[in-house]
Length: 138
Image (tube, rainbow, N blue to C red):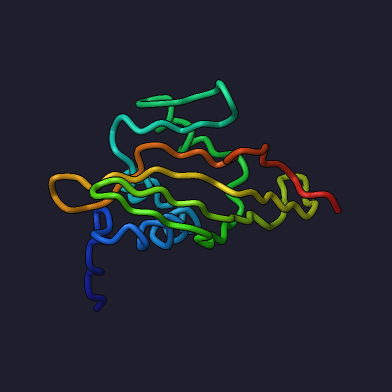
């Protein structure tokens, strides 16, 4: 007989805890938990000028093609009241659909906001940061 596992937190009450929750949800392909880490009207900036929000952003999460495991490391975090800026390095590494090794890395810039419930959620996610993310040179 197994015990029911506890419901994962909807969103963290400490901004530093959001990225580890994101990493876990992404690596477990838990799209419901991923969505709980974003505000409903959050922006996903795929590249300068390419912004998804609402249903488009949610659909992108479901259609994420590589879903290579991710490792995230916070580089800087700045909090001003109910707003946080988080700069983080990430690496996706694994095997691509054609069986070749694939590594995608970058530095993301995310803006979080603390809601009325005290939980922090992502309101702007910019995975490419100031550069362009893509496969690393071998």
